[in-house]
Amino acid sequence: MRKFLVVLDDSRECLNAMRYAALRAAHTAGGVVILSIIPPEEYQHWMGVADLMRAETRERIEAHFEVFAKWMRDKQGVNPELVIREGDPVTEILGQINDDPAIGVLVLGAGTEKHGPGPLVTAMSRNSGNLPIPITIVPGDISKERLEKIT
Image 1 (cartoon, helix red, strand yellow):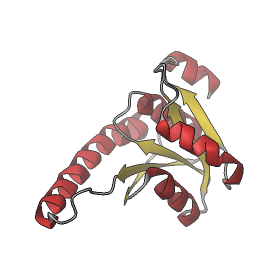
Image 2 (image 1 turned 180 degrees about the vertical axis):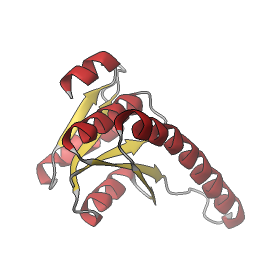
Image 3 (image 1 turned 90 degrees about the vertical axis):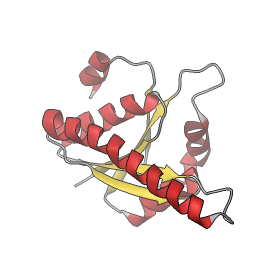
């Protein structure tokens, strides 16, 4: 089964990327891997605080994931899997692609801000020539209805 890899973060465009991945997976009998990346801690010498912050971040990620997962299961019949990694976003995305050979498409949401599509889309686009899979970039302001039509 081909899987769509989508990144869960706090951006507005993440929602459209999630929708797109779920709709495409439902229409192609595929799966969805939701990847959330915890950035490296700056204050490693405060290990107790860092561990607490990491645990709280994981709880928040799991709560967000459950919202998307319920919608995917109930509305699209897709049961997504959650992967949480720690480190640099580009490195961790590439690592997940390399670790899971069933991942066939990376789905990213493009920001609608004037300064560009967002750091993740920019960085992954720069690496796209060396990726083993295609990238689908979903416009951040595309309507739900339009997404349903094109998937």
